[in-house]
Length: 282
Image (cartoon, rainbow, N blue to C red; front, side, top):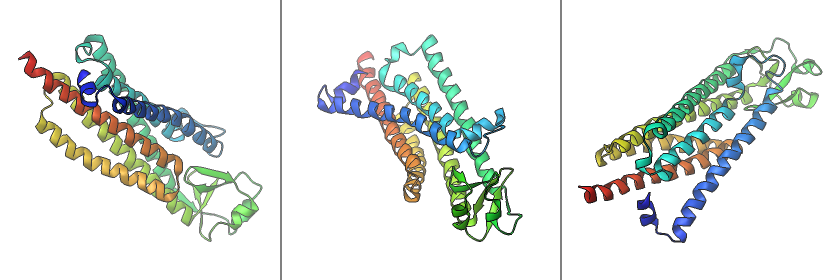
């Protein structure tokens, strides 16, 4: 990708660009561990005793989603910035596209996990006992925040509002205010996951057209408008996580937006390189 070096120069600016890009990639990889820790903690209050294979995606949707995204990101980085066009053919091409395809399937699978969690938060019923504090000492947990639980204690039940619900088939209680907040955050997860899937689709179209030499300025302008709309949705989701105080989701969303800014620059430079080479070979 010599055009990228020409555009940035072999200067501190180019080295800073590469350093920032790969630091973001490393931080995103570390987020896999952070989400796994968070979901393992939640698992101890939800499917601790009898989790079934079909419930794994709901229990570990964020971990699976983030891991698939990191692999997919590295595939896009290889194809748009590291490998030369002449090397992307045969087994290399099909290997990259095949791995991206598997990651895309994992993303859709993770999306179903977010959707299942949303459905679960609407599958609630009013508490069957008059006083939630009578459940203290039993096998009940309290939903404190979205995906955060604690064992039901006397102090915890006293802090709950008047209207209390039980969640689906779990021994989990939640008051109306916390439930409403969790439902909103579940919707944000669903919208965010769907928006990122749309980003992948658009980028996949751009990459495939670029490899065929058909990524025209008209197509780039059209996809730019589509991506601006999608990225606006993603910024809104990130903003809501920041407003709500969900630091990990906010931090992760910001890192992903930075990461795909780098991928967008890769695609721009890739097309720039092709435009510079074509007149010479004509």
